[in-house]
Length: 410
Image (cartoon, rainbow, N blue to C red; front, side, top):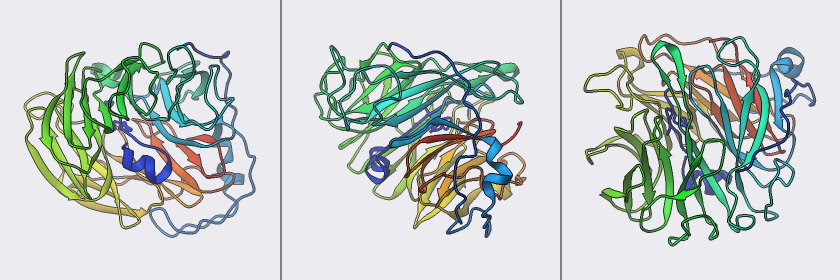
């Protein structure tokens, strides 16, 4: 879903652009090795930023000042598409895509991208508690052996229930080119659902070649874009086409799946579960927030989308106060964006740095996060993911690896 998702959080378009894809929702296999704490590390030579986040920023001593807030989740190898489960402060799962051979137990084909999920261990729910790395699981495992084609576009469910209680995540969705996953792959690229910690893979019943998938926060609704249209799938039923057309991708939906956002040929749209469509703005790789949460006719309606256009990151406030409504340019972006469950925080990569820009939808208040919130040890940021409370930023690097930056208690 995405309350981003990613958001929680993308599409086949993103995959082509950065070997990754999307989506998420969140309101907001056989598993792994023993749980271990991912220790903060200062392991890199500081690099100079080639651009800016919110304003001009250049700090060659970044790791000396902020390195203690950063920890390594995957130490090396090609990683993309980090996606949090957007379950309040819990952030129980962190999904990602990697070709790495030593990421988690399980048979893989060398050079083939797979979907993984790392589970948080230790004390969770307290915003001051550290995110400790637990078991990592290979999710996209084929029947009788490794998946024989790329898997990507992880989309985790989860949301924040009443009393600030974390609900889920229960399931995740992803895309795959593999032909040996349960349900087969009649379209060449198909959408699948699995448990949020792996296992129980099933193909979503949508005809044609899939270009994107998003799961609702409550795990009950899926939006799938294909080369011929956008479909909605509820439970284990067959998909229903909501709109026809080509060039669709990057569907992300809300906590109850009442509405989704997606991209089509450089334009961003929202669409309801009944097929009512609305053009929002020009842009690529849209990410929807978790949707209006508080009941009434707007519950589940997309409140904001983040996206890129012309090398810049933007957020468009749909259901927001006057100052937070409409399009806001956030800074230069070299990666797709990620938006948090509440729609207030947008993350993106800018050269070596991961950036976080905050403007609260309900009040219009801007947060003080103009400085980068993470830096790649080597290479530039290749992809980003932000947690529901935007207290954590996950990012991958062209030089290899996946990192987690602690922004602060929220």
